[in-house]
Image (tube, rainbow, N blue to C red; front, side):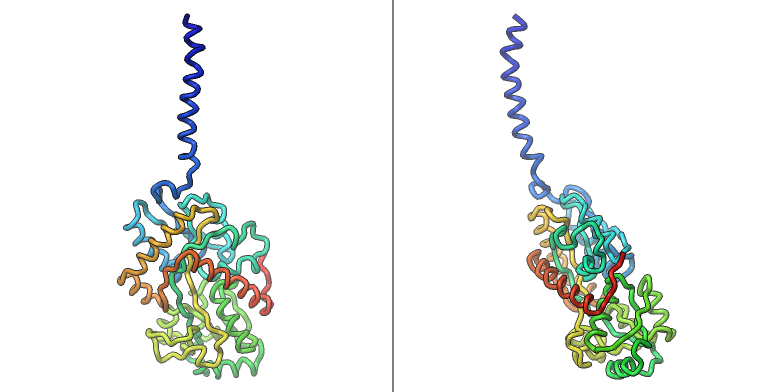
Amino acid sequence: MARGTTRRTMPAAAALLGAVLAAAAPARAQPAAAAEWPDRPVRWVLPYAAGGPTDLIARILADRLSQRLPHRVVVENRSGAGGSIGAGLVARAAPDGSTFLFTNNGHVVLRPLYPSIDFDPEGDFAAVSIIAESPMVLLVPPNAPWRTVAEFVAAARAAPGRLTYGSTGGGGVLQLVSLLFIRSAGIELQEVAYRGSGPAVQDLAAGRLDMLYDAGLTGFGLARGGQARALAVSAPRRSPVMPDVPTIVEAGYPDATFAVFQVVLAPARTPGAVVERMSREIAAVLREPAIRERLEELGAERVVGSTPAEAAEVMARETPRWARILAEAGVRQQR
């Protein structure tokens, strides 16, 4: 009797178990977008060292987002190899909404400069938001004989390859904006590579370096403090921070305009709902007057907070543009 009962009840039990598993399977298969996001702390991987303008902006936004979201947004610096180390970490991260890349223009030159990287800087990422755009400032030593861009260009043409410019190399923004100016002006300068802008600033102030582009925040500060002379800003409009400094357009080089932009990227295949939610949260924070004012103090000329589609459009436009500029400038690939 017991055996007969067992035979009759097993099919029913199996059917019940199958129904439970079938009901549970879709829930397990759902991406993070189907659940309340975020359900854990969120990492913003920053592929550059701490202390720079991109790092400062990331931390301001992360702190404010941590107050809005159920879990903290934590900035993690993973610098090295022109930003490819941090970018690679995010490219290989699980697309579950817990890891994002907070980077800048340097991302668009990773493929042409580092052809051996094991990830695709375009295909392995989904654009989330363009954060802000900031101009760069063209600086020369405080005691340099040049007081205008025209005078500096004339000196460079008179001695090709003799004057120097500071760069962090590897496709960093200091190198990119300098190459754009050199190409537009038709001059030849000798690159001096530094591990960061700090040592370059010291050499510029001491007269050991002839030219340096620096971010608006620090560049204007150097000029005000007498450590450098500002010849131009890379934006098409003068900065309200130092309105007496002309633009590179006014100097006669409209092709040398340049803006540093910060962008948030997610691993490819991150659920669209998560990407959209992060984008909306960033935009909401950037609309807050106190946050906008703080970013403007850091040199942001335009606080953006774009949609994912707008961010994707910017990245798609900038990537081939810089590949072409680097090729024309003969910049060597990095190993």
